[in-house]
Length: 262
Picture 1 (tube, rainbow, N blue to C red):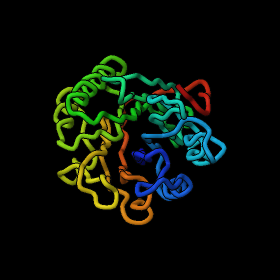
Picture 2: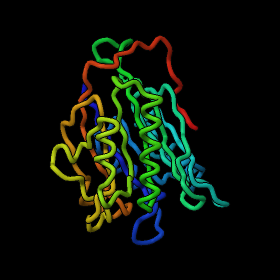
Picture 3: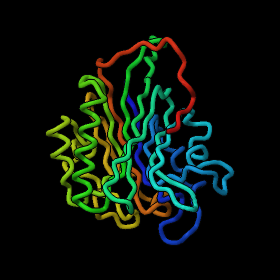
Picture 4: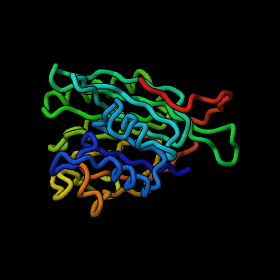
């Protein structure tokens, strides 16, 4: 079975060039992508001008299951990572991986049940982690180690995993570590030989955004460039199509909640 995923740093729903709200345009653009699971960063987790949290506004009637991990808190509200899913989220947890009091960072980990179209009561367990790492290399090294520790501790080695987000890894140091310690692969790199250029969106030069996977196969990966993407966030969105194997089949005897927020 194929799973279509997108990762996108939405810049808190504001246009990169000026403080103009573009959340409606972001929602419209995401709807045009046939994504089953969307990994988001810099999402405002409180009610905004749209009369809902950004998470709920973007999910709308497309992604009925969602999870949010609050990281940064201020007098104006809070923001963090999010996951939108067309498939039921069985469990979600947000883990603080901050290394200082200024940059608050976290790992949002959701366990998703991907149904089997031929056998509705059967399916596969898929672990999805939405991540936004720090700006300093020393901080990122520490945070990557904590990501590895969580996956070793919490996820069975045969379960498929997707780790996606804004890694801020402009020197491209994270991939060799993650491949060696976790046996994971980056989708765009595996198909194109290099990580995708995603920042800044109007003239991409830095390779910051990634979609890593394990226990799956990369079929396609591309940046979502051109109009309208270059007029929205300061990052481009990254899209990949991954194929699930026969591992990690599970049976669900209950109906999970339609949403999960941590």
